[in-house]
Length: 260
Ligand SMILES: NC(=O)c1ccc[n+]([C@@H]2O[C@H](COP(=O)([O-])OP(=O)(O)OC[C@H]3O[C@@H](n4cnc5c(N)ncnc54)[C@H](O)[C@@H]3O)[C@@H](O)[C@H]2O)c1
Image (cartoon, rainbow, N blue to C red):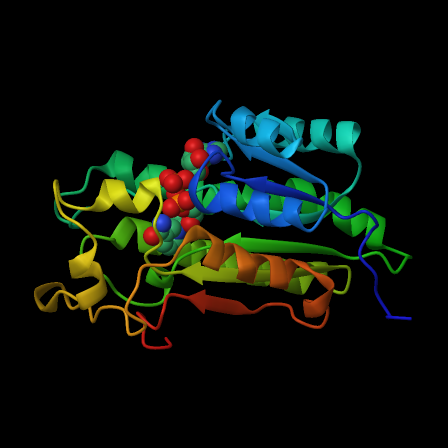
């Protein structure tokens, strides 16, 4: 008998699930037969939820009250959340000297405060359920390899992702032993966010090969990640196979950050 057990069935709540990596994570959980609930500010989340037969809620992760209401609604409708996956995120690129203050604030509000809001709303509930029992929960935050490696034109985004990494690991320390908290740091992944960041008409060749004048070394494994590549690591860290892993950060970038 393991010392700790996830609640059965372990409902997974995935933020940013309307498309891209979040939708892939939701599909990966659903494929295991786990119940899943989807959160996004985009109404398109209802289409993914319909495909999976899952519950969906629309909320802005940057809005603490909306997140608290959404989490309460999910637990009321679908039961206790056993796994939270923070995927919702935004990219606002540009050199520090040119970037609007609003872009800085948006990156911080969604990518860092969003994790603060969901981590507290779900973490409080998981911690309460875990106290005096062997029930555990898991929180995984999808950050970025840009959190650890300086990148031109990515300062606001990278800073917000570094904050999300630090917050998730501190949360894991405070919520142990009842909740494990880990991070997945993707590199370039084929999603609407990546496509929108490419220069007009450009493909992903330069991303794979590297751009010397931007100090980008390229991707040693020679390909852009598929959203499912990131989802597989999220699933592993969320599940019982990772029951003795917490406070860790797993980079899924084909080697682009040279292991940093
Ligand atoms: N695609 C990449 O190359 C890449 C690389 C590293 C990290 N990431 C990170 O992975 C995560 C997913 O990225 P993606 O590429 O799938 O992006 P995406 O833009 O394709 O999807 C992001 C999703 O998050 C939702 N979202 C954005 N702001 C929100 C908010 N305030 N409240 C609720 N939902 C919100 C969007 O509606 C969208 O459905 C992000 O955190 C991103 O920073 C992506």
